[in-house]
Image (cartoon, rainbow, N blue to C red; front, side):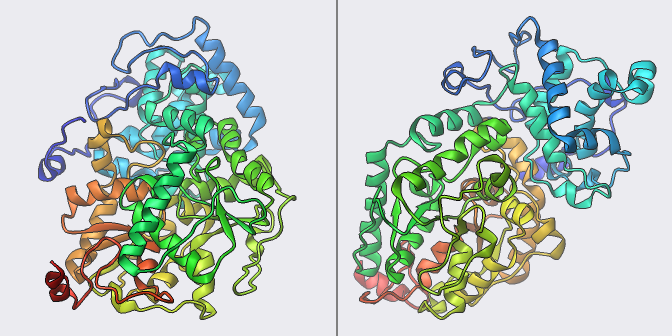
Length: 541
């Protein structure tokens, strides 16, 4: 892991003054902590990505194919014709700068090339040179430049300093989606075999085993059964999940991070408790055991390929519809791309809650319902017995994860659930949440340890908003509905706002849920004593 300066040193060393040289003449510096390890040859080979070989971003020779320029230009030409929005984004930007200070990486680093407008210009300048008349004639005067190996290295550096969070697009007067430009930029890099290992490894694992972590079916089942034992210890209630059961009404799919890593594991315990309590007829799949989709960070084609596994498994098991857990990019793929990519999923039924009878009309085409939406509906219809006081040891705020928030407009349902399971909920400032939410700083496959300095820089705006409610209201718990967030926000909080922990929404649901036949609870799902139970906990010791 790259060493990271202390928080005060990082702030003091951030300079927002523009460099003395123009952006086209300012070289990239591959400094430790600012770039990610390259994708391993074996992972590229598994999924058929081109030019698999061992290389490093700090090498002088990146071992590009001899005809690499032709590959880039042909790839660019193909995408201009295939995606009308992409050509529109290339042509209509007037460089007004409305997006400039909206990117968390620019705020945290001060690097002008992390302004969304300038990051897009890295690609747009090559487009102008070879695909516009003005660029061909006027060259640099028209903002055009030649494609060189240094330009490709610059693309790699900055397109992997974008989390595709789309905050900049909210403020663009022309509606340019700079995240889509990053996606195209990464696709072009992939044509040369240029990607990072923290993306290619999960993609290869998901293709081979059904999940990002490479968990085999028997291990996946064993992990969930381990959490069943943990739940019984806390509640006294024995839960019996089923796996690969044909004929179940619902297939439940969640990110594999919830199965493998804290604090997501506590969120998974909340899922299990909820399903048991309402008697849901559902099953897990040990083959489509991943809701996340790192194909989103690779290419449109890879995204489509990995998304299809969930629907293939739903068809094999003969379920009616799919219920999805707390994940970020899973829901962006489902809501933004599914219909034209893999769908519509006409072999499934339009989702209807078997508990309340609510028809989820928003899932008419995708046949997939967000668990927080499902739970909010249960609460609204009085189907859950909840004791909010069990979360009284927590003062909670909510991080709108970029993909469910901006990509699917999922703002109120999580807050509705939180206000029904917690007595102490406080929102962060309005310009840092909902549509304008700040990114965790580590999404889009950038949640790797060697990138820690940039993660801390990129996460600064989010941490600053958490610090506000921490100081104003004593907030000590940051909730979210994304597995990547649950993995990357704890080190971000430890760095910028010590004393604030991280949770999923359904961990708090599990804490508050009063289950039939449960014994008196003295701890939450983490084994921490509930409010007023500290003495009882000591007596047990």
